[in-house]
Amino acid sequence: MFRIAMPIAFGPKTRLAHALLRSARPAGAARFSTSAVARSVPASQSPVKPENQKRTGVLPPYGPVGVAAALDATPSTPPKETLFTHEFSLADRVALVSGANRGLGLEMSMAFLEGGARAVYCLDMPAQPGEEWQKVKEYVGRMGGKGRLEYISADVRDQEAIWKIGETVGDKEGRMDVCVAAAGVLKSHTDCLEYPAKQFQDVMDVNVNGVLFTAQAAGRQMARFGNGGSIILIASMSGSITNRDNAWVSYNTSKSAVLQMARSMACELGPKRIRVNTLSPGHIYTHMTAAHLDTQPHLLDKWANLNPMGRIGRPDELRGVVAWLASDASTFCTGSDIIVDGGHRAW
Image (cartoon, rainbow, N blue to C red; front, top):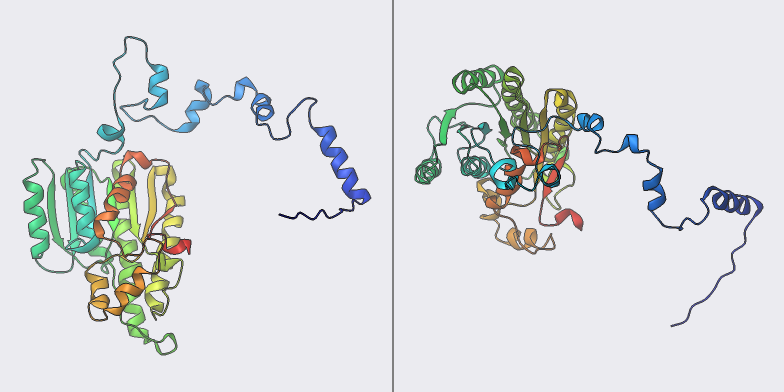
């Protein structure tokens, strides 16, 4: 190996800057030490001081947890495990999920019930739930939990009707804790220069307006009961990137709108302890994507090779992240976009 040393010329300004940096460093301090920074924080500003702890929010009823619980305990205090019994638990929670007759919405609804939710209200267009929904309801019922899977026929494009459903659920359950706006549509490959106004508006009505109306319906009830809550808007990696060789200008535009919608709502609703985040899946094999993949077999290999994992995802691979977003385990997460795309965007 050969190394070539290049002379570096230092001008007057450079030498002055170096001198100032040397004079500013305390005598004996290491060049890359963090200890000097730590020592410079006055004891009165320590985050473990009770007066400063007040700025970290209200502890949950089962708090303190984690290291704080260990430090607060006496030798006679029985230890308690809370991560899965409390933080990740959805016990007694009530959820409203749109687009939940099948697909991602149904997958997430089932996850909430497994997490202990009292009731999950599934909204979708058909007058009656489909066979998949019925099988999930029967299957969850045999798990022995007390949670209920309820179905309501609704059009997310009708703001007044969706708000009314939220009020009805709130009146019945006395609370609203979680919302997932998962209803969405994807239109066929269409040249952006020839895209029909009607088709573009159809996508916006469901993917943007419908998402807002669903979030409003649940958020109004969360504000009404004052218990905070978690609103999860289903966006897509297509809101941040363009799917290669797919002319989906309406879909991509709508998902970008959902990302900004969540950030805006998160800022407005933060003081009410209502969190708003987006979940952006990559290529997931669902009923919606199957309409393209099953009719164009070459697409499956193509999409699979667009991420480092060499495959497309399954709906069940979103269960964990949506349960985390819905639960107390994510109480400091709002205004964020959680990307689950198999590393697609890493390339």
